[in-house]
Length: 343
Image (cartoon, rainbow, N blue to C red; front, side, top):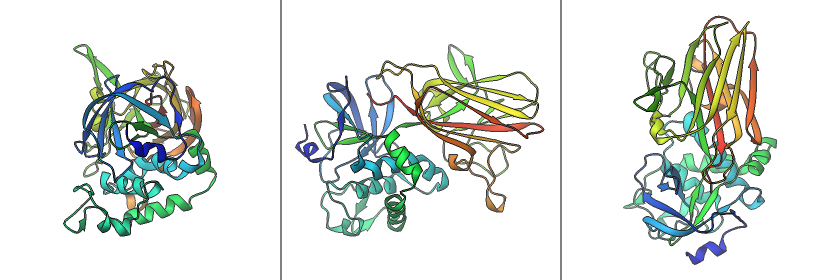
């Protein structure tokens, strides 16, 4: 195992995950530095922790998993990983390169200073090569400064509820975060579930002329008042809206009656790793007459922070929103941050 792991900050060994298997691929996913395939077959976003240490690709046995949850030393990183996906939705130009450099910048060991990147040897060529940075340096600095200075109640709460998973292996330490999830209406076809395109539309499709997004997720509707209750699936990690890449974690019921939409998230599936139900760490719900929330200049967004209804949770398995004062046919987007993907 990598000797440098012993120099990292405080972590908690994850019970039952001190002798497991993973497969590591580097820079094959446009959304992350690594692809990490776990024992249950799920493919997770992975990130580089130690920029100054080599990684080892391929299958490895006997790797060990640790959690940063609850440690003040990891507060800034834990918080950043909890808002990473929302930052991406707010800014589609934010690439995995900026995210990777932000992660290095928020970890004190090994020390990293973006202004000194030209002095560091063995930088990944996708990040820095031939005397040039292949990422937006100022954007990295701005986000790092915001994360370090953002000390309000929500950050403190999220940093306690959410951590990241560190993987000790034959190469540098690898890091994984929690999974984001969305509700989608599905239909059974040829023995497998597919998106019901008559009800759920992926963000990358033009349901509104000239409006689409690079992020995955679904807007649902139209839903008619005083019609029957709708039941949707909640899928985590379904990149490009491909259900085959995702994990079914629960169901969502939506009942629109007498001007009130009642939406209930229920975790119904058991985690391969914890042998318990997946749990909710955050939920965000958008409801409106347009498929997406509208922002300034009549533009649209799919960033969960703009959905209008949101809450943080302490690993619960069910949560309900009631949104009243509605009229006419409506759309909704139901997003969650889900725990249970770490061993």
